[in-house]
Image (cartoon, rainbow, N blue to C red; front, side, top):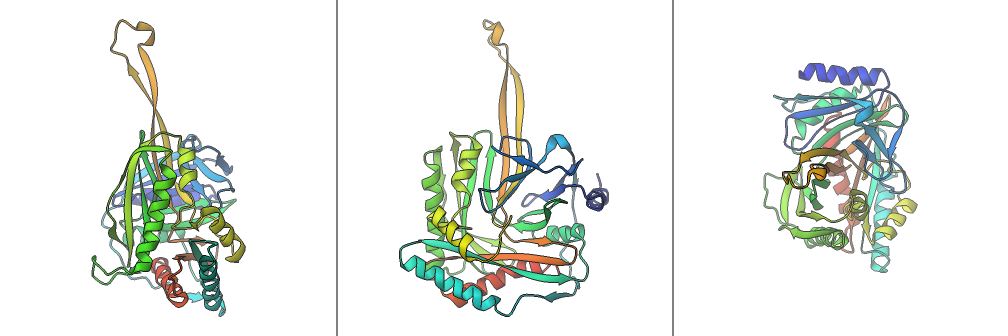
Length: 371
């Protein structure tokens, strides 16, 4: 269908207060949509259901599902989307003490690390803006034009909320029993240089994430392969990335549980870092740093060419196609407000003021589409 028809379908679904998700995978032109035909809140217990999942940071909370069987699936090619300058005026509503609170929290985290309670912890915050005008479908279109190498989405459920994002991080991709994932950590501004100098703090942070993923997957996978660290660009930021792949020996739920939340969004040790975050950040992350994406378990029927075994002439196998992403660079919208979520990994070498500046830089990724 045409781009205009696709966007109109999304707008009508939103106006009718019915759940939907529209999204585009990195470096592609195809934008997909799932438009649920009722306002029921479906959930996924074991990640075996087919559909689009939206899961919170706190893995003890339920994963929301937009099921394929209860939805209309549409798609369209989006071409010639060029970044433009926008002029929506917004007013900063961040309280004056936000900066000092964040810096103090980073200092507290560093102290916990130096006391050997933690190895690394990710500290985040939210920024709230008043919007004079906000149309989520138009904001989604802007995200598409600005962040072609990211997973871009707009997710809505009338009983839960409205979220948009452009995340650079893959949690897990599975085709059949083959999987790929990534360790993504370390951040600096892009300055027309894809071969920047990385400081020991960023290198250590990246290695911690890589080690965690490898250690936690070792018992669940085979043929594990870890590629060299590389620098990748996401908007106006650079990150360190390590790609990891292999063959699954366990079900999807066990593998996702082993990864989520990763040290890139939580810390090490995982449970202690998660506890520190929930007790000290002073706000609810909700779906920020959770994961989202499509799960598609396809049944494939084939014929056995061995004629001597007539009884087993037909067999059915399951081919899993899964694409899950970490929910970074995202915002939550209400009728008049937008909440942006940003954070950074803290290690023993972190400098509190620098960590604050890193969150400021990351916030620009989403602010760009609001102005």
